[in-house]
Length: 576
Image 1 (tube, rainbow, N blue to C red):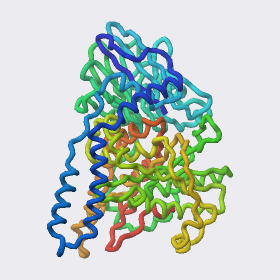
Image 2: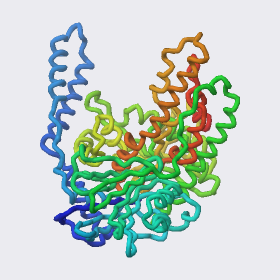
Image 3: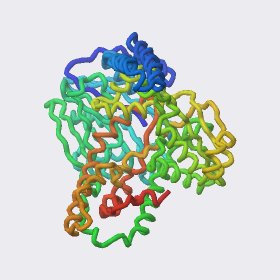
Image 4: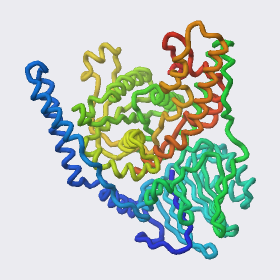
């Protein structure tokens, strides 16, 4: 995984950072200074934390009072709580270009290179940073007399597992010799999650784009020349555009014109008709086997390419909310390690937030309780294997949430809703280095016995996860119909409805699922990548593997959301 940035301007841009190669130690220094500046608690932060403590005291008092005998005191406490909750938002650290460049460095903490060039009358400068996950270690950008190539991603094509996938990609685009159709064809053949920028000095053109689904962040702006990068935190939100997936962008430097050309080969994602509902569910077992095979392989190729620089480091971790999607992933990853005979401990990262409104601690959050139960089920399933699971409990205090909130908002822009912040900040803290409580089990009893004597079976330690690769279950809900809105399609249906009515509703569901998967790059993927990669970690998405997506897109919608008058099991549940 890497960070990439390129800017084309009619005048030079003054920078505090010196154009040169940066070592890991230098990157750590500048990134640490920026994070410290962005997360320093202000006076307003401190007031909010004090208010949270006062709110908790008043809520505790409210819990002891009866409405009948203490009406006035209850009303007074409620007014005081409401007043303390109304506090103006913090102001973010002022954005600047040097700050963006440091954010790019943070994504690739092992190496970075800031460079400048001239293209006719135009000034070009770029930055590439590297997180090394493969051997041998390779720096970037890749250059020759004509091209400068910046690459952020992981490829799973045959022929690049034992080498550098960035070099593999450069050779593919270099062979296209600047022809847009040939370049698009070459990019269509790349299998994985990636974003790139290719500067063609001869043609005075900058090409950029990302994979078919859009699994890596790549933003651009043409407000003042061209700026394109993994993060563009110095630019206003209304000037930023997330690159569409499966599209080749070409910026003509001299004419200042941007064009878009879809890759010649696209994923097969057409919405499937709902008429197949009449044929029933005879092929369920076959489809479950196919799905298991596709998903297991999608995990395997993403595991095989993880080669941490230090052998003692944990190889992978799973973002673990305790939901079905991440639990299935953890199980499949464990199956792969088990078949390879490798003794591995997989980190399950679960985040809990202190809630000043409810008075609940991070340990008491609903996701935390569910994650412990699913960790138990995974440990039980693999109790006699070479694979075990470590539940890493990332507790976030309200003070920490406040301190880091504005850094997260800067990173995830242009996505900026409350929901974006809520999801983005959870991923941000899940990937943040720190010392947390980790739970392990050597002996796994039955669930009732575990609940009764939990402390007898669970070992606790202070632990820092060194995993650089984090597996995410994103995409499962979009592909399998996992959101409540998907089931809501059938809310108007009656038991005596005609088959044509059911078919029409499944058509509607199919179109909804198609929209969800084609819009996921803009809704989720860019935001999540920018939040997690800020700590030098890399996300991988087995559910969004091209083979998995095409297989599920080809299934009739009634296999994804089974209509009935009771809640059925999903096709995904059948795997676990």
